Amino acid sequence: MKKLFLGLFFLITSLSTFAFADYPEKAIRVIVPYKAGGGTDTIARGFVGPFSKAAGVDVVITNVNGGAGSKGLIQVMKSKPDGYTLILTGSTDIIGLSTFRSMPFKSIGSLEPVGGIYTTPTYVLAHKDRGYKNLEEVIAKSKAKPNTLIAGIGGKFGAHDVLANAVNGYKKAGFRIVAYDGGASLKKATIANEVDICIIHSPVLLNEVKAGLLNVIGTGGSLAKITYPPIQNTKTLREMGIPADVGVTRGVWAPKGTPKNVIQKLEKFIKEAANSAEFKKFGNNFGFAPKYYTSAQFLDLLKLEQGVYTDIKGKFMSK
Image (cartoon, rainbow, N blue to C red):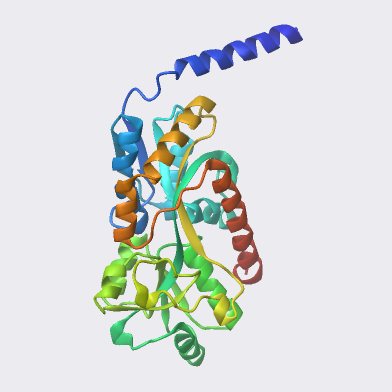
């Protein structure tokens, strides 16, 4: 019986591998779990061209907005694991939702990380008309007027939320945290001067910073490599006495159970696309040079990020 079982197992495995030997044979759909216009969507649209060239088939973006990214994530998780439905999103979306919500997936384990393509810190912006020059100045003002100053974030349970609560918690600040339905909506509110500070992933809104409409007043990690020198020395959270690094790595995931040979092909395509001259040009124009991570490196990064989120949640977000 044991030999029969093992024989059937290897037969099924071999047939599965053979069935996907010619992958990909049709268009690949990439879900972005937010509406068009945000940072993740912008990066995805800069990436799918080189990805399509590497794969030799069309790569089509589908925006699935809702539930702070969870709607798109769940749709991919339930998709057929054949390599034709993927998700391109931020590490923060995977880690944040599973850390702060009771979700039908367990963080890293329910999707297959295929590769990371773009890493940036989360930074803090303020409209020029607010007159703020640095985050410490705004923190002091928030203490004097608790629950009055608005910290706009792109959604609950992600890096934006973690950074806002780290500032409120470690600095005893009094910001009222207001969540928007994604970066696109937060961008509009920030440009319209509807929030005191905007917490968003760099380099989103960098053009408005260059134009003098917005000021960069703090950052969750070093901006030394951003392609705009005037803000490269912006004070980090750690330099303000907040022991946290907050940022995001955009990457590609496949549904759990996707055949190993398909994952291997996808890794090859993603590496080629991420290192292409076309994507590097996009990244430099957007604000940062792309950084590629193998699936193993991406998984290690996700585990480190999960530790930061769990720590901030335990200290300041569990009540």
